[in-house]
Image (cartoon, rainbow, N blue to C red; front, side, top):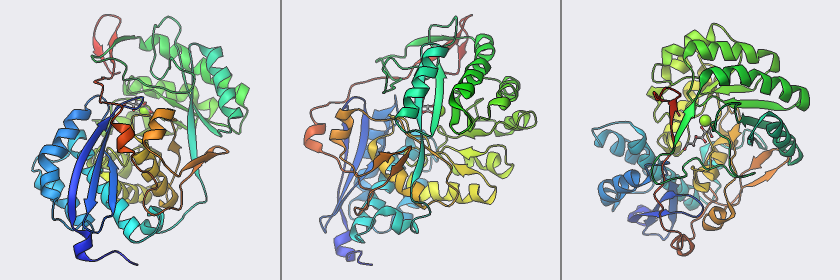
Length: 410
Ligand SMILES: O=C(O)[C@@H](O)[C@@H](O)[C@H](O)[C@H](O)CO
Ligand SMILES: [Mg+2]
């Protein structure tokens, strides 16, 4: 395996590129003396500049002169050396470095990243798309449209009668972008209306879809454990593939209250950033899918550790894949998904054409699955000249309040 000499592997440059081709992204570019460059996604929706500064001001200077091949040592250096461990900003910054280094190592070895991880475990990566509508019937129409596009797994999010907004309902028919304003949009939430409506949506959806389509739903942290148990039970007749983020997961033990009432599979973890956030959930088999990602959970190096722990407890991966995770993350995730033995499903929210033009890539969608490419590395590049035409544009995620004004979980 040709990996270059130590001299060629020496890091000579590390820089952050913040751009906004359709939405904001932060990308780390690492250059080596041998001329091989690697890139990593370090995008944290609504807090992008915090990660950009963490990298530019505190990490990049320390990378110069390091051996790009020492991925594990650099990961430990950045994790333990920070002293202030964990958290989304720190772990997204570490992820950007880690992903770029794996990209370099695979390029120097002249192989696609999944080969370097251990080779192919499957010939395709099952993905789920996002059908959403202003109301129940519109959502069912969108679900049928996604079936016609070839999706075999479809997440349904719908407007809720009596509510102006609900999570996951897009103003666009294909793209969903929640970070819409420079300051958080305030949205109103009513759990009782939602709990009365959601089972009707899935009764209608299962009847329209038949038994062979995987149906998924994202509760987006909005219920208490008991409310989530009630919803999970009500959805059992419709055999969901998973009910995601039913309740905030800082208290991992809370999922026991849900688990004891319902067999609806549970998926959690897109907001997690280390193995410690999910250890109890996995070890106590309180979830079925772990949603941690390359970009927010410390890169390939740490995500492998989470997936290996999960494999001991029959928990499968179901990585987050929204538009605010760049094509660099998606490309890397697909190599990971192609290798990881306990794969479950990959979320796939399509990026806009502007985004895809700035991040050329070799992965492709076909018949409800994504296929990573065979080019060396993770298969995604960054057109910096084009990226410069889309300067960073401050945007934040919404917040949610209950009808009495109580600040709630968005
Ligand atoms: O499962 C999902 O895709 C959602 O939870 C995300 O769209 C999430 O709202 C965004 O990534 C937040 O930036
Ligand atoms: Mg989610």
